[in-house]
Image (cartoon, rainbow, N blue to C red; front, top):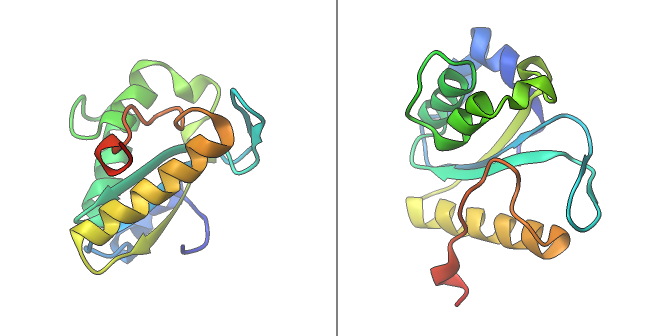
Amino acid sequence: MNPWQSLQALALDRLAMVPRCEGVYQISAGRPLNRVVGADKVGILEIGETDNLRRRLRDFVLCATGVREKGHSAGCRYAHFGFARHFPFRSLRVRWEEKGSKPEAHRAEHDMMEAYTISHCELPPLNNSFNWQDVC
C-alpha cells in the first residue's frame, strides 16, 4: 500500500497523481475507532476495489461532500448519516495499491475485508457488503 495521504488535499489539487488503473484502497478516519471487538488503531472507514482508482476516489469525494447523491455508496452513506460530525472530511486519509487486473483487485479487497472482519467481528463502518461467495 502507498503511504496515507490527506483525502482533502488529493481532492483539492492532487487527484491527478492517483493512477487510472485497477486497485484496492482504504479510507481512514485518521484516528482509532472502537469496534465490536477491540479498537481499529488505523480507523478504517472503508475498504474498496476498482478498475480505476482515480475515478473511484473522485466519486467518493463528490458523494461524501454532498456534491452528488449517487455514484459511490460509501461516500453517500458518509454524507447521509452525518459521519462528518465525528470524522470531518479534512481529517480523512486514503491509501491505495495498484493491481494488475480487476480480479486481482477484487481478491485484495476480499483479503483485507476478511482480515478486518476476523479482527473486529464486523465490517468497516462505510462498507455494506462482503464477498461471501469467496468464503462460503
